[in-house]
Length: 572
Image (cartoon, rainbow, N blue to C red; front, side):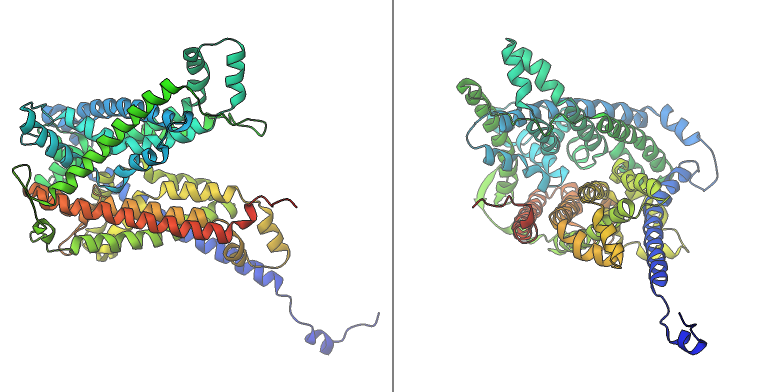
């Protein structure tokens, strides 16, 4: 073979594969660095600010654990701990019990109207938590419709009201988990129990309950966390009973005592973090009860059980519809419950500047849905598909926000973004900060959803693309995104609906001109303008339902166009 001279060698093109691979590594590294920086700036650093402020006095002097000692030794403040634990435990037991029977009826019987009952049970998701407290006041309060008609005052203010209102608010969250747990059943276990002559009660205790124990545990921890971190219901119906979430609000807004607010926030983090940690441990120990050889369990045919469960579900559904019916009627009558003359005057919102809060909420929710979906899915892709030494820490940091109560996050953002001289101060008092707080507050569930969707995809997609010289971002855009589009749409819906009803973090971050609809409901209720508060609640619920319908329609179209490959091919 003749030697190649310098002139011929100069004409040979320079290899570009190494340059392309180096460029991809740089891009991956930059994206991972950006994702890590986001988690640090908006999750880690704000939490450290809360912890640090709890160790200072109001003049900024370091005093160690003196604030915690004062917290424990002040009976009025310390009572918020026991109150929070008591109402959270009671609401957890009541909610999970009611939801389990409801889920059992939906999944294990041929009861009629199951679709209707399932839809009605989801209604509380579309309303801020304080709306349930307001509805209970309208029905059971001192001047409630039931109190006036019967003369019986049940004393709804305090622990009793908080527990029952929280049960309504948390019911759909527990139901979703329990429906999924009860749907995953193997008929062979029940056939074996029947062959051994086991009674229905024994079958329930030895087959059904063990099969759903992890679902029950997850439902318990989810409800407990929701209740102990909720602010809206205790604020509206708690009366003189103080819980940790309202104590943070009272210390910061009522007394301008930010150090004690930070102290209560750190204490509130403890039970929320423990519940989250135990829930994650339970999920890791969960094993699959449904294998490839499993047989689906046919719903029971007992007419008596079906009739009793139908009455039960109808009662629960009627109660839920009644709660929202009261809100709707209150917004349309002259003065509840004295004059039921029809009027639309409550929809003028003359005390909060018209419809600005609702428009702000729609804008913030839309921006949260778009930005949150992109960040959650891209972040999950970087952690799951671009395996590096940072993947583990980034995964842990990404699931951490679910253990941060909204009140704690809002106060943390005050300390972080309202600091004079800080470049982050430009975000304070803007809608952008509200978008960021919503994105962080509700980040964990979309991130885990995206991670689960990505894990179901074969890793060969990336390997084949790399072997063919296709950059990873093209594989991501042309293959990964189309396959995961249903999950992506679901993530966007989750962000939007939660951003529409959020209150706890936003109550600390709104400024004149950036009020949100849920915060407006709180302000109107505080001012005694409960009819306008009900009217704004109706608009929040209506907006959420319309958007949910739009997402459902979009999801159907996307599934039909991009997931046709999953359909079973017809024979012949």
